[in-house]
Image 1 (cartoon, rainbow, N blue to C red):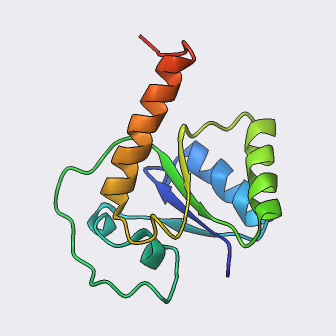
Image 2: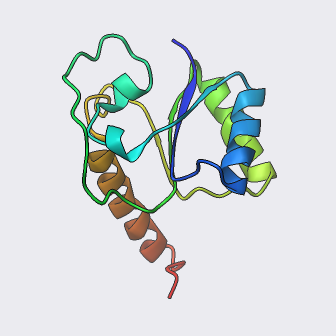
Length: 130
């Protein structure tokens, strides 16, 4: 399995360049997901050949939040990427890892789920921004 990072709403931004430097340094393939691809399965976007569901073109509003979806070849690769992000103070609050459960999900469905989780966790930790 190859290491891939799916980037949302980071194309041609300073933060996007920082993400590309960190993940590229570690050997990840960087893929900027276009809005039109938001209905494609996450696994297909990450290059997983076993995901065969048909792809549709998305023509909705999408979402504005930055998001990373990471498929790491090993847990060590994932740990290194997250460590370097913390070291460089590079924050992308919405992050997920490709799993057997979510590889068939669309970007929209995954975004909505991790956004809910993020909002719940920030509220629980008392770090909700006003």
